[in-house]
Image (cartoon, rainbow, N blue to C red; front, side):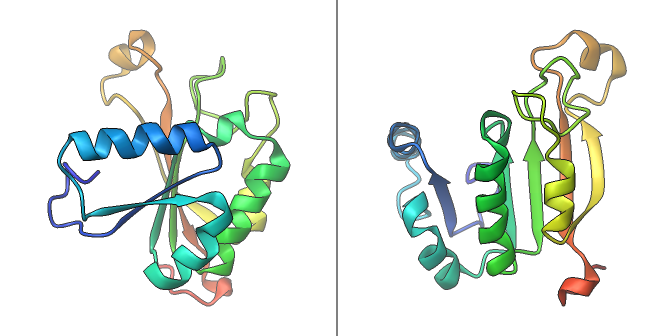
Length: 155
């Protein structure tokens, strides 16, 4: 994300797994992106979001590995800090990412919607349908926005 959007100056990377955070930090430093990101342990995410006023949260493949309780905890963080947009990229899990299910097969969509988010865009990872069928990890991108009844303009 930092390479794709050079003007992005403040990117928070949060994970509940310290080893994942270590690898992330090592990679970002290797890419020369110091000063533009902050690694945030899950135990400190509320304080970081309070300072950052984030308007977009991105989850790539990790909610698929979480229990519904863990997903609900993370969604509570987004709701508490009025993060307006949330993008999730699920694991393919035998349904090519067209469903929002964790690896245990549990549906995450109702939980996300109960958190005040509504789906605004759902697109395949690959725009060519034939490539989407045969390419590596042919999943979908899901973009949600906080609904108007949550007090945020949903234009």
